[in-house]
Amino acid sequence: MRIGCGYDVHRMKAGRACVLCGVRIPGDTGPDGHSDADAPVHALADAILGAAALGDIGTHFPDCDARWKDADSIVLLETVWRKASALGYALGNADITIILERPRVAPYIARMRERIAGALNVGVDRVSVKATTEEGLGLTGGGLAVAASAVVLLEEAAR
View (cartoon, one colour):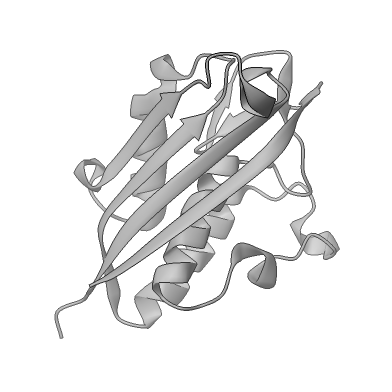
């Protein structure tokens, strides 16, 4: 078994779509970045890459490469998962925490779990997505940013 953890943060910007775990959340602001800036998916991709000792998301999808401009992060996650799977890993489980003050994401968590599970080709019972606030403190608490952390357990696939 191998464990990986990931973390990502993106500034919130007016006029940007808010895409978290591959689900569009209605609102006036969204994460800003080179791709769709889906911080929870980026954290998860980094966790998988770390567990498999494959580097980080910036190495595989650098923000100086025009191919990844406005990229769908679910597609990036699928690419990362193919690389880990090719090394013989199966997903034990993934646990994602989204940290932001607004918008409220609780109504979208079931769909987020489905999107992540689909990208990883596993049952939704292997994917956890939670959300929390920082009670008005810091960048996320002030509504200036969204942050996410993720932990994964990879297991050697049966041979």
